[in-house]
Image (cartoon, rainbow, N blue to C red; front, side):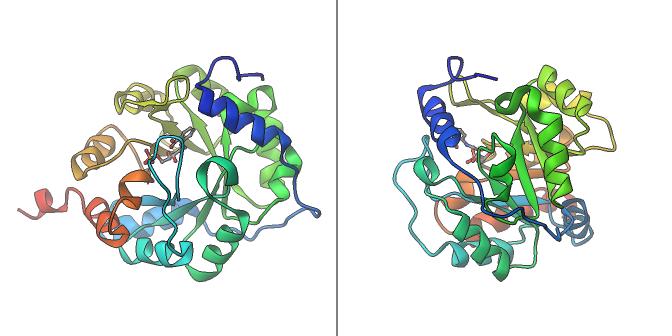
Length: 258
Ligand SMILES: O=C(O)c1ccccc1NCC(=O)[C@H](O)[C@H](O)COP(=O)(O)O
């Protein structure tokens, strides 16, 4: 699928860079930590299942966070994150596969590789517990890439933005679906996106709300709309990572406690 003409210039640039990137020299074989089990553990512990994202920068972020990514990841886990997402995209997000490897060695929660994978060999860049496939960008290759990722042992988060993409994800066999509240045509965020798509997601699919979740109220809103888990980057990376994570993983508990 050539989506380059339909998306924001920053995303066109991200896709051009992704097309140029190669893959690993050898096929990876992953022994993955279960994401649904990590969500269940968080719930049992009274925490909202949050995937906290190590996101040094992005096209919509001012500046770059240059702290040690492993230290940031450990603070996220201390703050109650059920899982982590680690940017491996270098040109626009300041990430790297090396960051992911070091973080995965240091923590005991599942780690999602956040990147713009377009071709099978790019799955072999680095081991992770979960890999992201963006329905819009992989187009008709979604089912083949999903199978190729599972053959390597990855769990797969299939990202969608509307009900048509959700249908394609489900037809391809997605078991974990993320609804991205960020519209990649304009880079605008609207939490109503999740509320529109979520009712069409079957019960047995693990459903994740992605992007634009900033406050405990946003967490409660996404949970009420059906999110099993939340993927949060910017709001956690801005300031004290441990405190920010804690305030989101504890969202709603004050209401329940009273
Ligand atoms: O975050 C961006 O600026 C961005 C720009 C262009 C394409 C993708 C982008 N983000 C990818 C993501 O999926 C987010 O990092 C993730 O959902 C967390 O979002 P947020 O909590 O809003 O940082």
